Length: 254
Image (cartoon, rainbow, N blue to C red; front, side):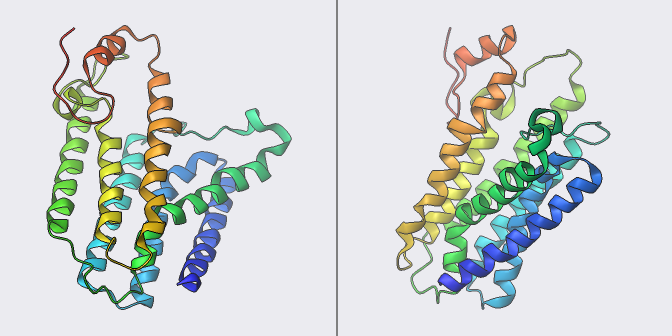
């Protein structure tokens, strides 16, 4: 088991180094945003070809594949024809002479480590026989998540194409019930993946995966950074008063 984790970490470290080289060539440090989702697919591909997958492990691979492709494609399409990809990484001006080594360690290597942590339940499950691994409803959870994500992306794409007023806020569809349905969907997916692997030995060690992604999105790089972007926007402040921050709920009356 330890060997599988070491091999995955070495592979994703090499992958991150290659993307760092691409970032230097393109002079775009934030290209790591696109590489993020594809890295999960790479690891699942490695696990698929080095272990005999059970039906439930195959389900986990499919979930991660759909998630990774959707995320990377969404970022590419969202930033098409933009001079600067919107990302969270500081650029060369902010880091000055330390840009290159900080870029490699803090952006690419750090993300490689985070990826292994988040994907740890899947890595743990890959070489296991899978006896008793199936939980009733896991297939339904997977199907509902795919439908939720597809509907969410479609609603956002329609709004983006039709938006004519600068600073307008998405407040319809899923966004009527949650200010961040995209983050809610990701959190649900990773908790579902962890729950599916619970019957395996030592599985509770990997609760770190959904707990970490939840803390990351709710308190660090997800919701706080996005809502900071709309600080001072009157429409967003009104929307914020009546709409749940994460878990979809009926709008409050204000």
